[in-house]
Length: 211
Ligand SMILES: C[S@@+](CC[C@H](N)C(=O)[O-])C[C@H]1O[C@@H](n2cnc3c(N)ncnc32)[C@H](O)[C@@H]1O
Image (cartoon, rainbow, N blue to C red; front, side, top):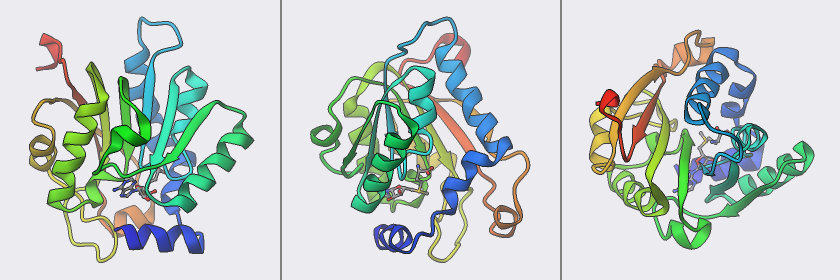
């Protein structure tokens, strides 16, 4: 997938960023953010926009009152994020780093919220396990993780997607508390490729009601 993303950013092909303007998807994700903020006052804590691309979702997170870091292993993506952050006038640190290797050196630790819109489901099985270990190492003990994933299917160069079992295997110290339909009104491309996208919400310290 790394070659795919490098090429995508080089030629300016990044359709995943359009989801910021696709209300059914954006509303579902904002609803999940809102859940983490309920009953609290900003600043809400440290959030990691993982595989951030241009920080499509890091920017709204920062606007909501999270202290955001974005990380991506494609330098061109991080350069785009830095430009987007400057234009948006928000305070976000965007760095180059690999979510499967030595993530802590790139982003530090103590994260309360990790948001991944589209990275995990494109990794191979070994990389997924590595990402699980790396994310667990940089999060606080009551952290929340939101993973946006396609249903599993061969889509050529596009992400292969993953099952609930794949998520559970990569994050054995976490509990899936919710599976939320990510796109209640898919566009024609999403329909053609049968993305069937969901958000998995995982907690490291689930409440009794979550189980
Ligand atoms: C589908 S894009 C989503 C980008 C962004 N989250 C968004 O929603 O606009 C997936 C992103 O994950 C990044 N990525 C893939 N593998 C990665 C890895 N091992 N470490 C860090 N970033 C990675 C890609 O470079 C790409 O920017």
